Length: 86
Image 1 (spheres, rainbow, N blue to C red):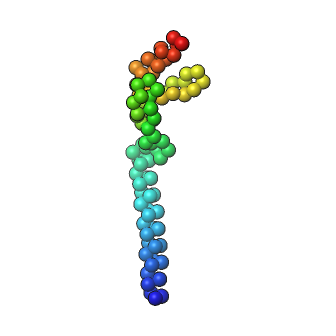
Image 2 (image 1 turned 90 degrees about the vertical axis):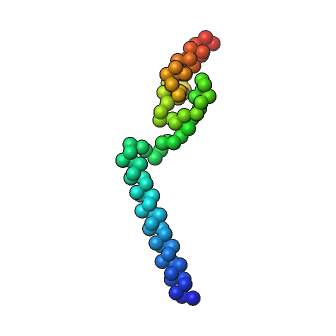
Image 3 (image 1 turned 180 degrees about the vertical axis):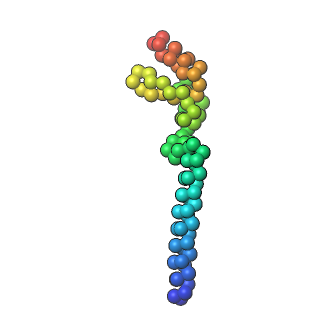
């Protein structure tokens, strides 16, 4: 019974070490590619055309004290024009 418990503990510790190493390698690999962990895959919706896109690829605009993200400059310009008419 003692051997089984010892093997279970050793297996668990080995799992934790491998998991930690794997996470460290993946994190380091993502930084080499120029990606950051925060917000790298955050999808947001364009307020003009309702398309979803990755936030870091969006066009940022500050309108009326709020920050908006658009999928393209054309959508940004249409949104600004539509809100000027109001």
